[in-house]
Amino acid sequence: MSDVADMIAGLMRREGGYVNHPADRGGPTHFGITQATLSTYLGREASLSEVENLKAPLASLIYLKNYYYGPGIDQLPSSIQSFVFDSGVNHGPQQALIFVQRSCNLLGAKPPLKEDGIMGDNTRRAASTAARRFSARFIKILIAERRHFYFKIVEAEPTQQVFLRGWLNRLAEFDDAETRFA
Image 1 (tube, rainbow, N blue to C red):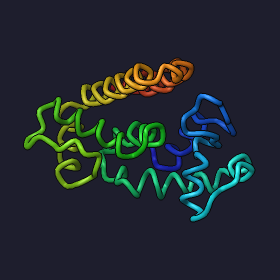
Image 2: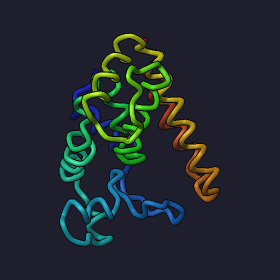
Image 3: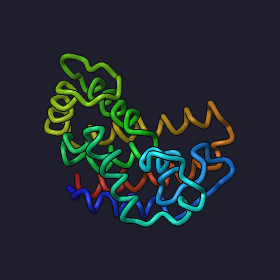
Image 4: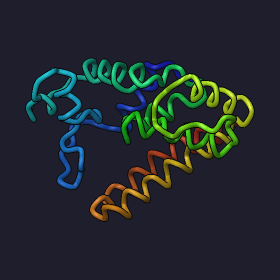
């Protein structure tokens, strides 16, 4: 569907600019890049000022390396890449791939996938089969898995309730897009 530059542009729009919300467990972010993620990328502790002044080109490079190519999102069917990429930024790439694996299992993947969040040949094949055979249903299940995950976060940590509406609005963008293209 989208190429990676379009995915990154959409992601940066959804994430917005610099945010340092006291209830955000990820700490300060800019374009969704946390201080910890920037520190890892730089190979040293990033300052709050560096997060605040992060430029879009560097954020894009981090997204490409750590959230797209690194975890293997580029190896998934194009119809789900944008959703899984966004999930990876929001929840971590491993959790995003668990959404894919669990959804494939719900659709009857043979053999059943190990839900470990690691991109391997079985995950790649099962996702390709699910996208081809179940198309819109596959996307609906992915969306439902992520929605359920948001509610589990709030249930486990009620302070995160403040973010739930925004998370669900973010998810609705994919639900609406799926409806338009189905």
